[in-house]
Length: 320
Image (cartoon, rainbow, N blue to C red; front, side, top):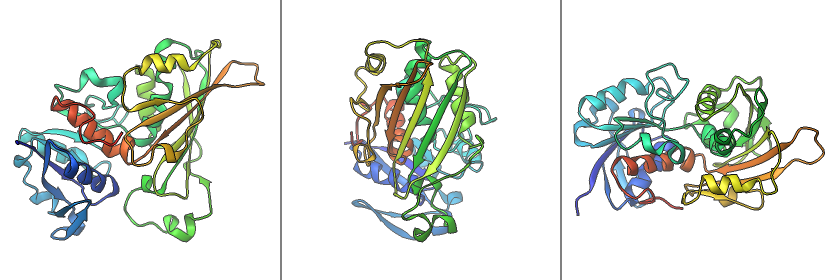
């Protein structure tokens, strides 16, 4: 059976390794190369597959029909261009081509909301992990015009330490993270904010600010976001809007109870709950959103987008 050759640039990081493991188990794909500059020449066991890393500049880009770029933010754009020069299509996991990044934007790969723009794309900008959790949660409200014009959408989100990347940092040592829980990037200046604002406006936001405070969880993977949104009025069943918006979507789950990380870890899903806020004068909805930052927040969604590019069933090779 013919398999589509794909390559991964930046394969030694958390997202890159997760992607190589997914490709190894994908029935329609085969890994043509995996690059990792600092580990060039080394062999790594990823799931059932053994991978030998090559230097990025030695990666045989012409052998791949699709190249996944999981390189650091700011370093990816050049290699996206190099891959495109060989005729390969690219799914870029960095922020370089996302909305609000300042570069020439590519179609945004928030698959459930932007699916129509993906099939003919040469480059797909894979969303960030926090934006995936937040935008999938608030999109139905924005599209329906339920959010109070000019109101602030408040987001308090917590991520496991793999969200900070693979490079060693003293503040991410086990003794610094274990048995602790802390906020970071306080002041509403996180790098994902521009992406969230740009896409929220595209989805129908009406001059709405987003106040975003991320936190570091003492776990390896997963994001849990609590989002409060002032709305024009309540309905008897507010979750009905989400069920209607995501009807038939295999990777979106609308739950009756607030989701937990254990519901989503190692799965390519976003699990959402919607609750009316009591004891407030302004009608407000509380949306809880849970994803695995390495799956739906990165590699799983990248593979989902690649499936769309190739005309495959979106669920192929992905754990639901």
